[in-house]
Length: 190
Image 1 (cartoon, rainbow, N blue to C red):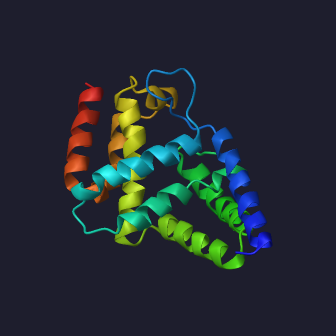
Image 2 (tube, helix red, strand yellow; image 1 turned 30 degrees about the vertical axis):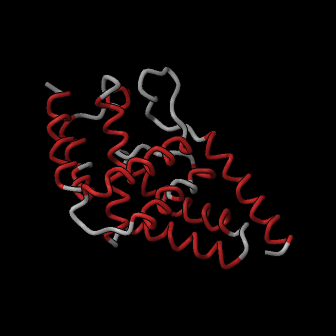
């Protein structure tokens, strides 16, 4: 690796520091502050590793891990948008693509292109790995809400039917995962 390439890698990784300042809508369980996107990305990556054997599909976990570590990088420029706000999510899509193109563009060309393709694979959600990764991305906020008195759901006026409908793709992480969580969601609203 040339010194120039190394400097580009350093510049990129320092840019990722900004992900620690992107506030999400969920609070870590038992804490008053809101979590940040870097914490979320780390935690769902670990969750994916422990759920890999639960998947109904034979997945390439290394690819999933890469997707989950990269999937929220666009939020550095755009911020976090709550999953249940369809309009805001649609508006953010194009801006997130511009953001990741800018950020991955800091890297040596080949590396930047490779990471952009991994990010796009997650975003498009068509491969079995992307479907699994996107499902795991939804599992953690559900677990947080179930174990934090429905904090984010209640603060944002999100009801049971909306949650069940919008998170049903959690079954892509494994049908047993969705069955277990949907039962817990039902109980949380009783």
